[in-house]
Image (cartoon, rainbow, N blue to C red):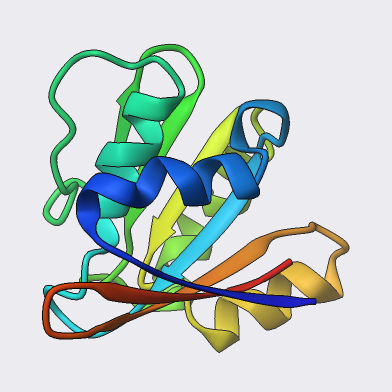
Length: 136
């Protein structure tokens, strides 16, 4: 089922509520153009989940961990095969929230094939807002 939200940055908590984020740990694949708001969403989601410290894009690290159970991945710099060899699937099986920037259809297909559920969030920038297309 697809849901569409058109929100400004300050309103992202509404989307976190609609996703029932506090009660639904799991994998969230984020896609969109450069500077579309993927990291901004993760910042707001982490804040919504109670994380109080800085959240930054893990572009050159592949993964950042915030607190005990919030994981933030940026797979833009890695090809999927390399990522899988590094143990990515084992990482996302840990209990918690896994936000994967640049989570594409190839990754979605693999997750479907091995039976790992995920939520896909596609972000489209508008003038002063962002449009979020969510497939769960």
